[in-house]
Image 1: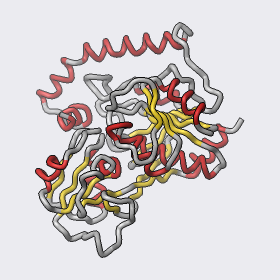
Image 2: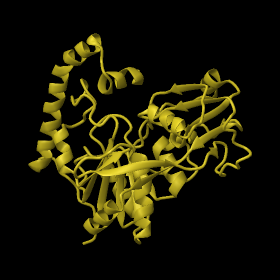
Image 3: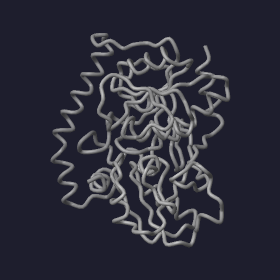
Length: 331
């Protein structure tokens, strides 16, 4: 399903798919009216927006699908710490059924907190709280942990929470797709929204005026079963390998492997946030070496085999971005 939607929104649709886009335009018009009305309610003060006692940085996008928000959040955590800040993170906890708020602790399962929160905390040990209501999640975080700046993982459209800095993360290859609003296209808000944010980060391709280029640099292969860095005599670049990816843009991971000159015999794209079972991966890979993303690895650790590996990536951003963000954050 995700593959079909990606082709509909981001690819070059055939006549039948283009007809489907046009047929969905009335629903996109309805989506526009509802979203604009909701935004107007906050602008007029009819719906209340809450201001927190610490600065809030929102990392989000206006398109559906992966753009690189999670590596950006990890970059911000590490960058803020270098400047003496005590960051905390809030997130919705996508795909987890619970009420209220929940603190994310190292070692918690993605089924408890979501795959991205589990990955962020496993990598950084940052204080983090999830909850559908981001205001309540932020209040719970401030009450329980010593933080002086909050990063909201996603939530650009969560206007109940006032923010000091907005970061828009764009997939440089796909950008805004066909530029239609949902469901005809991938947009949660119109392209005009980019002009309102403080910073736009473009993941992986050349950026335009008033945008900052972000590159995701691959690290060392790590075994899914543990956190130890791969010893060169353990990971085989020549072994028969199957690459899997359950992220917003699986092709980005497959392209990275190609750029690293890693041959894969088969590649398989799963839906974003898909919960993995051992039999799902065995059915595709058999006993072959399996290569995956860090986000997928957190969902496979309990049943991973010895020859399953994941590739961590780190965001690298123009130093001017760091200088400008810190300057804006300071009172």
